[in-house]
Amino acid sequence: MDRNMDRNMDRNMDSKQATTPRKALSAQYKDREVVGGVYLIRNTLTNKVLLESAADISAMKNRFEFSQNTGTCVYMKLQKDWTGLGGSGFTLEVLEELRKNDSQTDKAFKADVDLLKEIWLEKLSGEDLY
Image 1 (cartoon, rainbow, N blue to C red):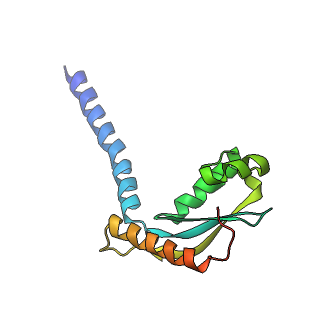
Image 2 (cartoon, rainbow, N blue to C red; image 1 turned 90 degrees about the vertical axis):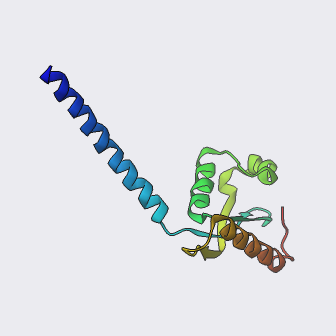
């Protein structure tokens, strides 16, 4: 009987220890600085650009690099050219970054990032856009 109690106690301790790192990682993720912004993906052969925005620029950079490395295109507007050139025929350029305020909601931050994109769309009016 004591063995069963010891096993149960060990299991309970293991599960508590297992959730602690998970909670710590979750807290770190929530406390990280969120940086959004506007970026463009440039076709290096034609110089044509796709203007986009993201609430998390770092995640978007990772997504783009993954797409380049795997040969998959996540932007439908680029699909035809991406298929012909491959991922190495494109570059990602961050045009402007915007830091999220602590008091700002996700929705308000996304609205600010979208407004920033509209401003950049006007600035790039002479560019050949996708």
